[in-house]
Length: 268
Image (cartoon, rainbow, N blue to C red; front, side, top):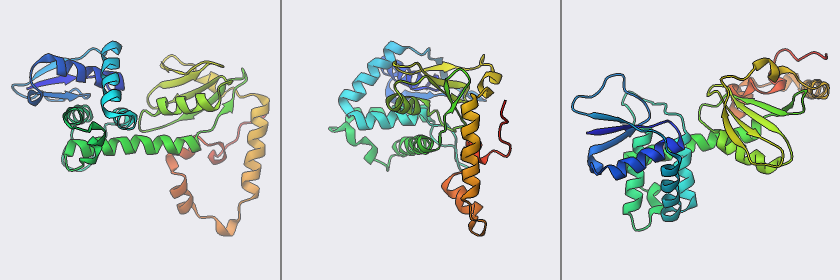
């Protein structure tokens, strides 16, 4: 058995699919993973895959042409989902589920219908991963809040479980084309940076100076106070229902929303 170790990204997994297909080892003898094992399996050969943008693009073009944009988007969403496992039984690895789903799709007469084959465990896994990433991105499109820094940059901090920055970057680049903005994914140490009038790009944030992200403009601080005052004034004490509020706005999103912060910033 040959196990290909891929980077946990769309390009990493697509590169793994390309190399697996080109290896000649036979599909039945290959598995993909994004998680290096704690204990290596006996009689398995582990092959580290170097992410190659050119190979990834070739796979992407083939999937778009053969499966259509909708199914291709679902596969990308699955690739961006967190690898989390549930239940006592170990779930199919994300990369391997995508690889097997692609194999099935290209073998079908109409590959765009591959995600209808939910009786296949690996297809069901891809479907669930895709829904998970899409749902979180959809929530954040409504919950994400930009704040103006003193240098005029619009800044938003998020704490997602999945790698949703590509969805958010594309969405807000289309909505705010003439704004300089940065969306900071703190758990994954990554940011979507959008220069005015250009497209967005993803960047690593391990060297980012955190103190710069807390320097808000005077106008921003004033609007925060006004908004929080409005938020408090319209509340009806007799109708306060934290349980319902947490259902509509999960707690993990509240830490990045100013009206849920216990202490407001002071005016400089």
